[in-house]
Amino acid sequence: MEEKKETFAYTYSAKEQEEIKKIRDKYAPPTKEETSMERLRRLDGSASKGAAVVSLIVGIIGALIMGVGMCCVMLPGWERYFIPGIAVGAVGIIGVIAAYPIYTRMVKRKREKLAPEIMRLADELMK
Image (cartoon, rainbow, N blue to C red; front, side, top):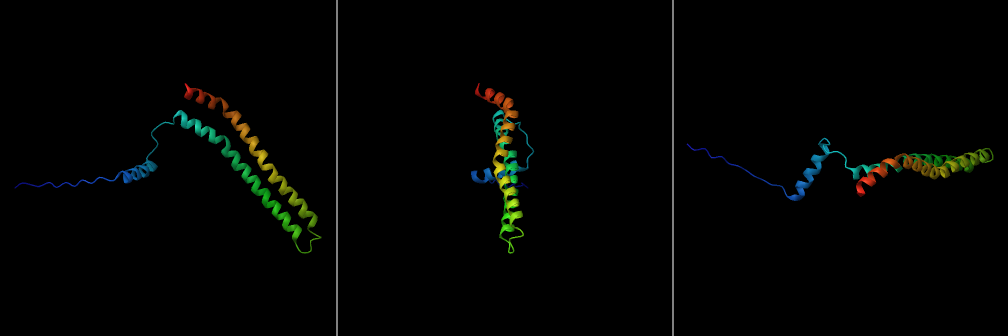
């Protein structure tokens, strides 16, 4: 007797194929090396990321300290907490004001550190 072999073929749509590829790429180990352009973008972005985190932390802590000072000033029986509240609020204001100079100084230092590598990669890509 003759055996019949039945086959079934199914193809996904292009949209489904793209979604499958994206999901697969998330779990696949990285195989390709970083290109010069990708490295240039990553280095440029890294110059400001760390500085942004530090300045945000300083600014938020300063704002919270300033809020504590404001609370002390507005407490009932304010005579006892008024002067300490002003002092605490001033410390908080200093923290908020210091956030931006901290950011600019950190970005400047990081850019100075990364400048030779970025210039080398940029020159390599422009050739």
